[in-house]
Image (tube, rainbow, N blue to C red; front, side, top):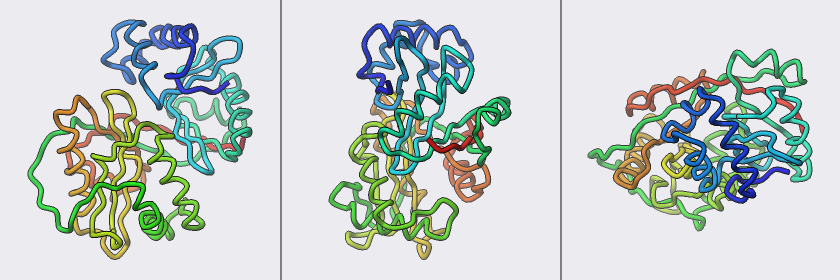
Length: 287
């Protein structure tokens, strides 16, 4: 059974916490502020993005992002290191949710293991992170918080932004489904006050949308700009505005995932003081 960690029985959460604590490197990389099983349990129980797969007992705990077409799994800690133990149950759950594709981000050292279990190697992705700090910035266009009332406009903008890129959306409805999932909290609490769009509605031309990944970590879920408005500093301003809003809020880290070959995003995040935290390879399979 696939369940958000925050909704799991105490026994399963404790099994997950004990497993994490037994894997020192995983604990240090993913829950560095936790020093024992009790602190890990508390963190898992208050998070919307950590998910647990369990049948009679604990199988695995991991981060999960769900869209209309794909479930993306990352930061996996399992009781059994075999991918089969995780993916058999996970695929079954995703099929019941009518999600056709599964992407698992794994370290380079595990690529052959996952390939042997029927997955195809995809792109390498990099996780960036930094401490949110307040900065002075001058918006080039009006900045507004991105809300559900802007969903139709943002969906068209997102579709237009991605249409000529690999992995673009086939239509605006698919883009709207993903944005609705973000704003409704499917992938963690939507941080509306720290999510910004540039322009005056209905003429929005860029947006940066954040969710709460853990109680003290925010994540840039989507960052997109209309092709005619790129290279004008709009994304830079939106991320700076998000950090200004997060600064002093208790959130200690702002993170983002990007394809390793996306030089534009890499340069943008590096310029804003983000550091590369880890690299993972996307392993792809149908459910």
